[in-house]
Length: 383
Image (cartoon, rainbow, N blue to C red):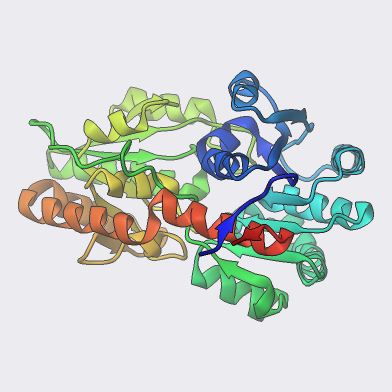
């Protein structure tokens, strides 16, 4: 039987932020390390450097700017990445999200690296925004994506079939270049079914506080539910950041003062957040495959989400949760009210959600598929 042996190989992860690597990519790096590879992590470091280094990984700082597209700053970032690739010459780079994929792929071609894995965890602000700048840049970036992801020794990972079809039909990436690996996995031991707490039901949205996560619609739905007199607490958990779609702190403060939602800010213990909740909600505009909903589903919480790519992978209407139309308020309020008032339905959907995670999204499944891709690209299969 074949096994994966990456002894003597080096794998470099290029992501924008250290917190993102720690929350979404750590299991992949551990698996590569445990298979014998040397692991390097290149990103913008803030709070997680010591933890990442304690895993035995080499930490390399990259001055990513996530606040938008600035040609001068971004060219400096590209040069920094190129210097890293030329210095370390990794056997494989795993680049995640738009800027790492774009700048990293150009640098990898220049440095003649032997294997490139690009992961698009959703299509982000660039493909959602209708601002004049994004409309101007989108065709240019699409052409670059087509050229860079059709190179030999390059594979593109997407998290759902809708995104795969978009890259094939709209951007022009060849089908054989694309691999669908569903999400970044869920630790089903850490996130496990737990009994509902007594008292007023809680619907929690675990997300960065961005407009394109549907936070504005969720607050409007919470306001409508309050007007109806529905016994339901809507809770927002997650940070703001430098994303152009970030919700201003003063707006969050005004919602808190109004009493329409509870705003907890960022939290480390997400399993504990779901233990205190009854419903997992994310009315996002588009996702790759939302880890927060997967974690809620793993905790046997019914899911409410928009009928959009990524969300519909885990929110299976009538099986794991209730889908609502994009950018809707009243249907979102109706779905939350239905689950708040029907305990049996809520728990039945929660059991279905847990089963879906165990069958399709568990960490060992997703990490195993990714490591197999590494081995295929680097010749790491051994008998």
